[in-house]
Amino acid sequence: MPVEVICLIYILTPLLIIFLFKRYKIARQVGTVIIAYAIGVVLALFGLIPVGEGIEAESMKSIQSWIQNLTVPIAIPLMLFNCDFKLWTKSLPKTIAALIGGVISIIVAVISAFFIFRYSGINELDKIAAMMTSIYTGGTMNFYALGAALNVNPTTIALTYTFEMLVTFPLIMFLVAGGYRFFRKLLPFEDKSTTLENTELSEIETNGIENYGGMTNQKVFPRMMLGLLVSIVFLGFGAGLSILMLGKLNELVIILTITTLAIAASFFKKIRQLPKTFELGMFFILMFSVVVASQFDIYSINMSAVNIGLFVLYVMFVSVIIHIIFSRITKVPGDLFTVAHVGLLCSPPFIPPIVGAMKNKKVLISGIVIGLVGYAVGTYLGVLLYTFFKLFI
Image (cartoon, rainbow, N blue to C red):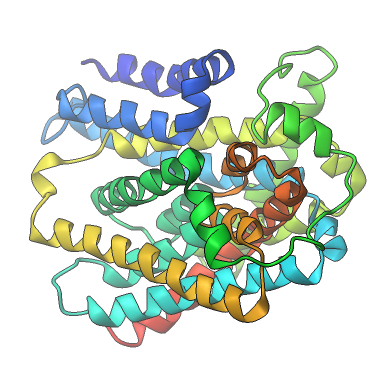
């Protein structure tokens, strides 16, 4: 397929996914990123992406690289601008306990997994472990951000995310289908202190986290574009700082810089109230997801790939167990535990469907607060553990 057509697919696919998300309930249940990833894998499996030697293949690689290097750094500030981190100051002790327990459980699971699988033949294990830390505290955005910052091989990113989906998606389906009752029995504590007052509660309940309606409204679009401009300025500042510090562009420095700037900017009301910046950021994340998934190489699935799957399975399974134990000790109610773990493992957009299934709106904002804090710390935590893992490679 011609390179120009592939580029057009990369640009238009997020628009198609947003259309499906707005129109069909099943698309909202599956999730936008998973749909984007599936489309990219299909493009790769059907051989529609130019690969190997030749002008078209080289041109395709260059375009993919440019898209990957630009979309995530632009998306990060956009997705963080609307995050009201002041909600954290209104959070209550049980919510704090659920968050701390979740983060500790993920750190312990990833570190133990690293040493268990250290000699299993997994390529870039230190980077994979760091990415798993970031995705299981901050979701897909942090996963891709860290993958770009650490220059992880696209095939490694694709394989890791594939197995993460295969492991996490059944957990979500289990919870929606009634699995939350299992955690209620394990953690049968009273749910007294999880309610947080917030004026956005009714809107979140109605529209969810991703609400793509009205993005082209004449009053919304210019302000949304202002958010994009600020994001690009942050990217330029990060690039300039990287050159000033290291004499070259360093993606790790850029990612950490724009993340820090975006979190700081979110505390300013005028920035936080810019409409639809989260959804615009998701547009860039969807584009990135399609590009990365389209580089999936079926022939790369070998014993090393299988071990990546086992690594991911171990991390999720152990993190859940440790988090349950911590929640038993701190008497975190079962529903709060559920939204806390989902908020960390899957990010805030997955919270409303779970809350809807549980029919317990009291934990909605608590789960979103935990997910937002995960957005904020996920990249930093991933970098910190990557630095630690490098000592043993």
